[in-house]
Image (cartoon, rainbow, N blue to C red; front, side, top):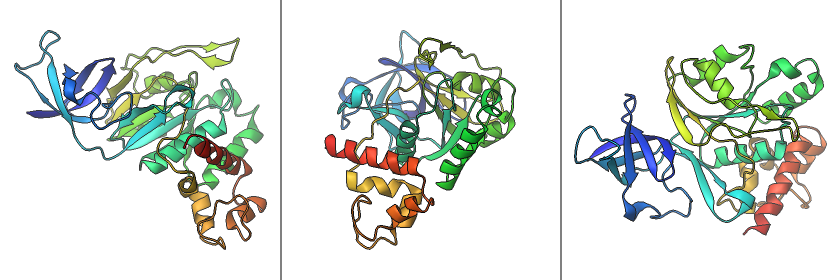
Length: 312
């Protein structure tokens, strides 16, 4: 028995490598573990460390390795599948950092969507960083929106990096942030994830798509979850664009715990527990009224609270 990391998932077939060495070989799942102990549509994900056996070495397409078990994860990012069904999907596992790529426009960032990803990172102990791509397009035209975005998310305690895959602005800092780490890159279609990864390491061969003028949405250019090695050190997990992000296994009364700015303020609430919606003496509501917690983040919280009650 040997161990390796899943670096690509294509349906029922996988590519593995014994990280930190980069030498890919094919593998399949042993049937009995396909759905063992998991309600996710993919019980095994890119980034998972697995135990495998192989009758010959190296494994080949004709005689692939067989994954017999999945090792314990240190963390993972998971979302509800399309249309907020009860099925869930693991995006990636064993991540050091999650870079959430967004743009102010083309396509416009949806703050409730972004907040759901951030809450999920908090729940599953993944360190998130917000990356605003395409700054060459909106720095001057969207100066007020740019400042407001920084105020909202830096005020909540998150790092916001401004980058441009086209001009190279901020790419050096982003490359340094990825060094010697396993990093997830995620976001909606069209934000430029693949272009940005290509800018980080031009030797990588990734498909790059265009924005649909009719709907101002990106077309999927990444079709599989896949890990790439960076020539400067570290690994990047690229993901298909996400159009819906539902929370998984979070009780409504727990959601506020995963908004760092709300958690801090809630220590002064008169009542415990407090839903921060109607209770007298609520320090969170007071902080919103005083501008210490953004109305946008509070609105996202209320939306998740109602959604959590609906899907319990």
